[in-house]
Image (tube, rainbow over all chains, first blue to last red; front, side):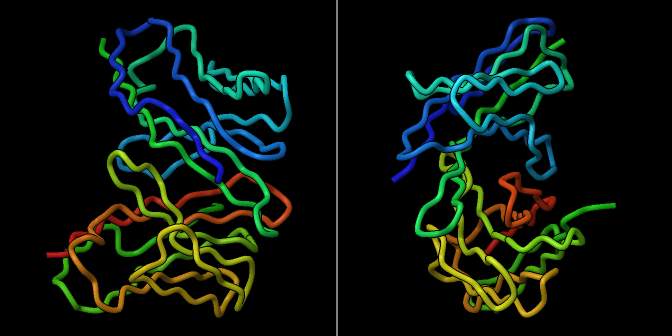
Length: 114
Length: 112
């Protein structure tokens, strides 16, 4: 079946540091890829997405590029802020049995310290 | 405001005492899902519904029931809760033709 692999963390960075959270996936066909963010005490919300190979999703200074050759969708940000502290989930969406199923990674906790 | 609401947000109960967690969305979404979030396991889908009166099992359906009598509501029922159902639960919804899901704020359940 489909799967998404990402490190659990926590990842601890100082403010203004460069962020990379790795995400790799296994899927048949051509999935869409997502990054969701979960701020403390809240539900998940979409951060960015890409629907086909070489697409770049971007939002709030975060970026991720859909790399089909390496089956990856790494999340990057050039300069993190304390307000970016959250749990980040990589996910893929693909048709399975007539239904568009979403598979999530385990989530990576990011802590940004002043 | 477009949103997914869940109630209650926090619940402590005892083994075997039936409970229901409600989920409601005001976006006229066809698809609704329930997930549980556990440390080291991420989000796992419990049940989903493609429309009114259409539901199906997700990856971890054991011990749970759902119903979809109205488009906006998708309650999660634990008829005989056990301690291994202690978890953080999320309801989500989306339009049939879109992939982006909208999540509720979560329900933290403790079963003693």
